[in-house]
Image (cartoon, rainbow over all chains, first blue to last red; front, side, top):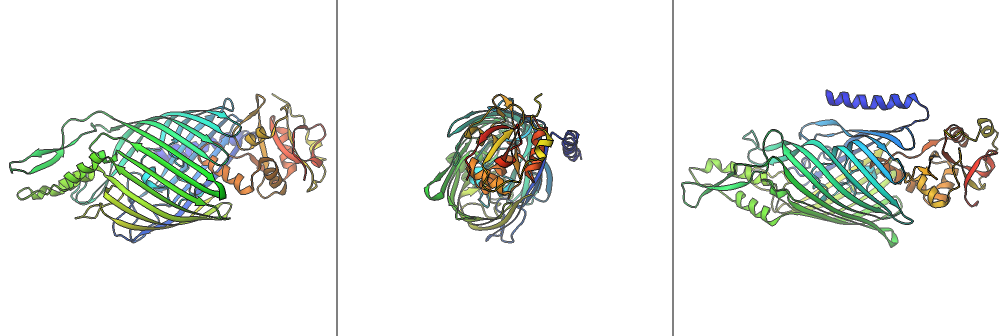
Length: 419
Length: 139
């Protein structure tokens, strides 16, 4: 209720301010995606995609209001209706952006409020499918950002060049969010398989350098994210405890923990237009998480090649992500720890702890195209072949099995629009 | 505050544009003359001032032939490129595109009432006494 009130109030204030002065430029726009995705496997991939098909993974509806009070002072509010970030069963209306922006000079831009962070090349516009050609941004890289929205401050300085504009953006902000886990045998608080969402508090700060020419863009970012749990410690290790049975051990959480985790994130990206209208885009990201979920410590990268043919933009990309070797070995040890009688009833707890590690080892080869059907409409279609290595946290492993060694095909089609 | 130098009356007596007219860029107030890169930056939102003075670019609606000539001849972009550029820029939170008007006369009325506003017009519709800040080559 409070969230709805804040959203309503924000839009009302903007509308009122705009109406109060004809000199203000008030601009409302919207965006959306109606997307269908289907795989050839019964289990869920990326929360929602299975052989039954789903509209939930990619569909979204958003509205954005921009108001210019003066050429230097403005405000932006963006809200969206999308699958919840704290439940797999509902959609939420949330406020993505609500910030004021001030450009005291051409070179400086100050934004304060709820902001989307400049992580990867398309993080800021990820919700707006009409602004990029991939049917779905490569999750091997785009899942690495621990959060994308914070309430805080962003200051950027731009150096305008004859051919290249350089922008250095520094930001800091806080938010509350959720980390999703999936237990294939049991989950937190239940003896049934399923997902649960761990509430967390996040503080994120970073520096991002972007170079842009008419056709190309390059980006490098360094971020430090502090993650804390609500009312409890975090960062607990998973350790093996001996049992009275020789050679048999049980994995469990170690006592202790820390008040907060310090999570460094680094990213590099480039998108370059080559001769013959061929565009090559590559991104790389690295994150380190020192907790029981050490599988979240991983790197991810993709390389794509695309070429425009009139209204069509076919593309191919290969993406890969991999947790640290130590995390994957830890997952293998816990996952392979089969307890004999009389401890066999505890085996689901070992799978649960293995799932807590959240190993990430998978690659995707995708072939797709976008087709601009109008100035405001973009149709996309994609076939993606996903292979998991040791295991992948993007796969909700079926009961009695695991997410390792899986091959799945994902077919996606979507209509992306703005209005 | 700068006083707009173009009166509404002058604007309304502007003649009918010829499709081959040279496109010129005019401004209200005392904005200085600009070079091509500055104009390109202004219409792509990369700068918001000219010569230390706040500047507000105005545009015609998509599909207008004069807008097409301006985009292609001055900014060096097709309609699709320009619209696509602003689509991304808007949705990365870097601002909305210039305010758009259905006709040159409407745009000139806005220009007259907005200090620092910048607009492009065919040379045949340049109001007398207008502050011409850029001349593009006619075709």
